[in-house]
Amino acid sequence: MSEVQKIRLLQITDLHFGKTPQCLVNHVNPVMTFNAILDDIDRLRWHKDIIILSGDLSGIESYKSYKILNKILKCRDKKIIWLPGNHDNVTDMIKYLKDFPRIISMALQNWSVITLDTSQPNSPVGYIHADELQMLERQLVKMKDKFIIIAMHHCPALVGSRWLDKHRVKNHSDFFKILSNHKNIKGIFTGHVHQKFEGICKDIAVYTTPSSCFQFEPNSQKYEISETLPGYRWLHLFDDGTLETGVNYVSAKLTG
Ligand SMILES: [Fe+2]
Image 1 (cartoon, rainbow, N blue to C red):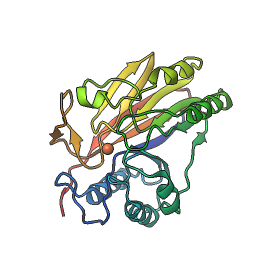
Image 2 (image 1 turned 90 degrees about the vertical axis):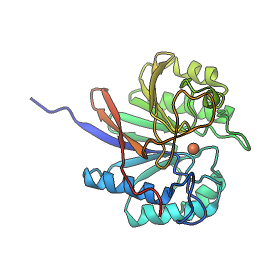
Image 3 (image 1 turned 180 degrees about the vertical axis):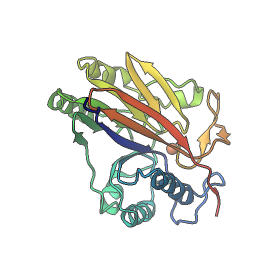
Image 4 (image 1 turned 45 degrees about the vertical axis):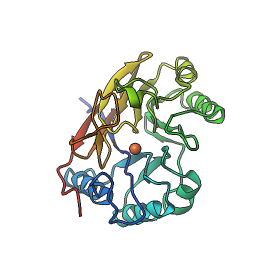
């Protein structure tokens, strides 16, 4: 009997790098925790797998964050797909992640990953621009024979945390209306909420992933930092369209 083939993808999100590798954010060194996550991936022998970096790669819209990140990814020989978050500057990302050009979509055997930019200037709230929605429609038509996953920074679903739910993709109904014409979408993977969440919205599975540095308290009414460890998500994509996913947390020395 032939074995079902699978592809593994990894998602690391909300890196929040600063201007130097020594900068701390909420008492955590984000470069150190990101490296600890890459170490964990190496330990599992997943080092050759493609990593989706789903926004807030900088925490302060600094080109210096991208220079630091480019160097780490190049030294560690990583394959990545990146997209911006609300703390990023896309122009600087394109310029300073110089060894990692922006990839909008990627076909992987029976599967395809489509990335979306949900960031808007000077706002933490998600919004998908009309051009971006048109691009999504075009990609979905082009990839109609593939199983699809969508990666984006902001969550289009409510996660049960009042202050974070205000940042939900504002035009989520336009987004889901487009998706409703396609029955091959297997999951939406986001960042921004700095916590693990798994739910269903408009019949589509929605997954959020913990930050690679600090987490927010789930189900909180207001901004509240949690003691939960840095984490990342793994995805197993089987060639019959089955998707398995889970989150690994990393016990790292958090400050340097
Ligand atoms: Fe973030």
